[in-house]
Image 1 (cartoon, one colour):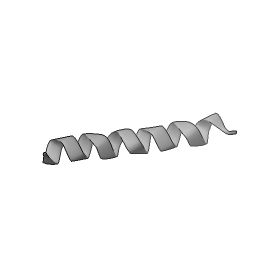
Image 2 (spheres, helix red, strand yellow):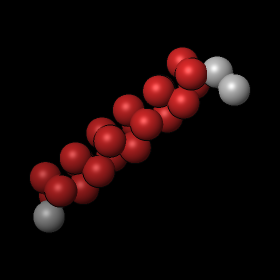
Image 3 (cartoon, rainbow, N blue to C red):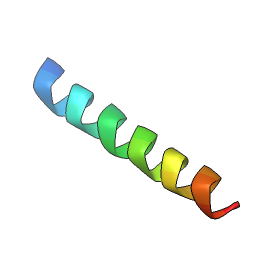
Length: 24
C-alpha cells in the first residue's frame, strides 16, 4: 500500500467533510 495515495484520499475526504459542514 502506498502511504501517499492513502494520505491523498484522507485529505479529499476531509475536504468534502468540511465542505458539507460549511453548507450545513
